[in-house]
Each structure stands twice: as structure tokens, then as C-alpha cells.
Amino acid sequence: MRLDVFFGAHGLTSADVQGRVVVVIDVLRASTTIAVALANGARTVIPFESAEEAITRSKAFERGDYKLAGERRNLMIPGFDLGNSPREYTREVVDGKTILFTTTNGTGALIAAQPAREVLVGAFVNFTVVSAMVRAAARATSDIAILAAGSERHFSLEDAVCAGRFVRAIRRGLADVALNDGAQASLQLEKRYGNDLARLFEDSSHGRTLAEAGFADDLAVCGALDAHPVVPVYQDRHLTKLGPDRER
Amino acid sequence: MRLDVFFGAHGLTSADVQGRVVVVIDVLRASTTIAVALANGARTVIPFESAEEAITRSKAFERGDYKLAGERRNLMIPGFDLGNSPREYTREVVDGKTILFTTTNGTGALIAAQPAREVLVGAFVNFTVVSAMVRAAARATSDIAILAAGSERHFSLEDAVCAGRFVRAIRRGLADVALNDGAQASLQLEKRYGNDLARLFEDSSHGRTLAEAGFADDLAVCGALDAHPVVPVYQDRHLTKLGPDRER
Image 1: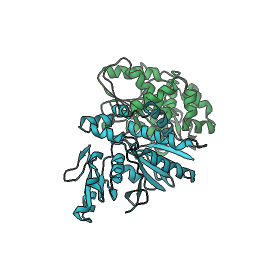
Image 2: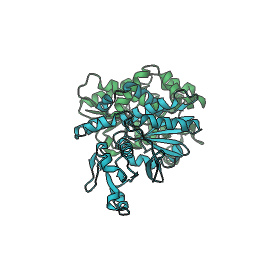
Image 3: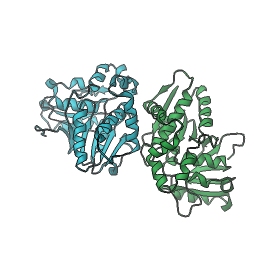
Image 4: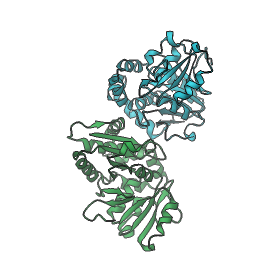
């Protein structure tokens, strides 16, 4: 079995993901926000590359049925209902709603992952259930790719460390798992932090930027291990929660 | 002072390098080969993105004055004089010659770095002189970027570890050096290997590929710390050796 970690969607080609189970990670904050939204009852999250596309799509819905959501440079988009802070995605706000979602980094990574056999969204908040799901898939023959989305086209420490945690969990007890250089590096980086995610976010430049922009409380949410145990699945351009109540 | 490490040229924009001193690293093998060629008296190395461009340019030279050089998938290009094995670039072969050079990864990284104030080529074989040169530049106000070229669009462990060694040397004793996430990760990865570059190349997928393709002896050359203490400078699309005999 191959278990590869790729940093950023820019260098990715179809061949890197085709036929594989892919986990897309954008810890700060898209992956976390998606998990929180689905855990709190959002019907689906639909990612868009631009705010304009999200607005156009919104016209197909009744006003009460959707939320326009997302960020540019960490801030809510003018005219939108929600930003990219997971704390906004409470059950009161998102239950039963369709979230039309656009973010700087996470959306591009999901779209790059589309040729995969299955695309899941991973973060610290849903780490254990997603890694268990990937392990199950791995036993059933599939190769695995983890896409650490990064920030503004560049490597992000927090995504690499989260990827390393996934690599460690997925390969545990399995023989013959071939790791690429990205997977090896992620394992090394993860060792430094373990469960000290507060320290990770202090070392991460995106973490510091968020704290300075007034989103320090978001970091606590993004570092709450297994607080939102859902498996977001990306299929036909929709993110839904895997489980008995999976619906579109 | 900013000291950033970027993995791969794909996500790079002009803004990431403009006004900076940039070190381009492609340990296996372009950076090493360039250093060896210049150390052994090559007049200049001119990088090209394609074999066709190199051939076209060769027509401007007398046959005895140049060597067509480079690789695709680690092997010499048909009709070329030299591959990308540093062991081929002996004084007998390259002294006084212009090397028309095309490789899979290193060339693209050099071209991406062009908007920089100064572009140097770094590897383990010229580590100390290049890092000393960059430290001198840093004192004179400049920000620094290290471009770890990677392999076939993806992250390479050996380039990241070499970058980490540069980060460690460049910032030693300097106050207020701001590191991006790539620089922090590189420092962490470098700690694992120190001077055990044989182990690094065993862990690196490109290192293993080269060994399997019959280039195991190249790894010893690429891991010979400070064996070829030259500073290759990239200017006006030519690589020349910095020093009293710098010439074009």
C-alpha cells in the first residue's frame, strides 16, 4: 500500500490521487469548519472557488434554506451570512441548511482531489473517526493520499502535523506501507507536537495571524481533538456526513 | 529579517523572491552537479527548460567549446554529451567549457527564482561557503528565501534537510529572524539527520530511485560536505562561480 502526503494542491496531478482514498486537511480553518457544520446538522456543504459562483448558486434555493459562507484573508465576505470561524456554525444557525462555502485554500484542495475514488475531509476535531475510516479503506486494497492544503499556496505546519498524525494512525500495525518523502517528513514533524496543539498553533504562522486578527478562540476549537466525530465525504461536489443519516 | 523556505517552485510567485537573496537547492542532483562543474573549471552553466532549447543554443558555439548536458528521468538525453551525474563533470571534461544544461526539477526552480536580487545554488558539497555568503548578504539588510526544488513537482526530503541546514547556519547568532512554516519544518527535519547524509539518502525516495538505477556512487558525491566549495551565482540566465576569476 502507498501512503503519500502532498503539501498543497499546486503540484498535484490526477495521477497522484486517481483511484485512491484522499484526505484533505486544512486545519485552520476550512476542514474544521466543515466538520463542525456537518456535526451540527448542516444538510450539506458545497464548496465553490469564488464568491460569485456561490452567490449564483444560491439563487436556486429558498432564502431560508441556505447560508452563504466563507472568507477571504480570514474575514467574512461582504454580504455573506457566515465567515470561516467554526464557532459561527452552531446548531441553531446551520441545522438543516445548505452551506454554500468558499475559502482561500481548502476549496482548491477539494477540487484538486476530485479524481480520487473517495475524498474525505480531515482535521484534529474528527481525527479518530476519519483515520479509522481510512484504515478500513486501506485494508480493502486502496492506496491513500493525504493532501495538506497549506496556506496561500505555501506549506503550513499545522496541516503537515495533522497529516503526520493521520499517517501514524493509518499505518499502525500494517505491513508494507510505502511512504513518500512528504509522509516521512510529516511523521517527523508530528513527533514534536503530539497532543500539544496549542504550541503547534503558536509555531504556525497562520495560527499567529488568526490570533492577531482576533480569532484566538478559534484555535481552541480547531485543536479540540475528536470534539466533532463526523466523516465528511466529498462527492458530486457536495460534502455530506457519512453515516446512517447521510443525505443530499 | 525574513528567512523563508519554500518547497517546490510551483506555488512560488514573484513576491516570494523579489528583492531577496535566494538559494536554490536540488541536492539530487542538479545543485551538486552545477557546483562540481564550476569547481572543475566550467566557464559557465546555462540552464534550459527543454532539451530543444539547449540544442538550439548550442549552434551559437564552436563544437569544442560546449557540452550538451542534462537528464530526463535520471538518464542522459540521447545525443547529449553528459548526463546529470556529478561524477561525469571532471576537470578533463568540463574545464573552460560552456555547459548547456537541462534537468527535470532544478532548472525550473532557477527560472522561478529569477526575480530575486541574487540567486545562488546550494547543496551539501558547497554548504559552508554558500551559507557564509548568504549570512553576509543578510547582514546587509536582505531577506532570504531558500527554494527546496523537490522532485517531479513534489516535496523531497533531501532538499528540505539541506534547506534546514542552511537555515540553522544562516540564523546562528542573529536576532529577530522570522521563519515561515517551511523554515521551521526544515529545521526540525534537519535535526534528525545531522551529518548522517547516507541515512538521509536511504530515507529519500529519490535517493533510493537513483541507487536502484545504478547511481549509488553519485549519492556519496552529493553527500560529501564542503567537497566543492564554490558559490554558483545565477545572473542573466548564466551560472558562474563567484570569486576573483568570475567570468562569463
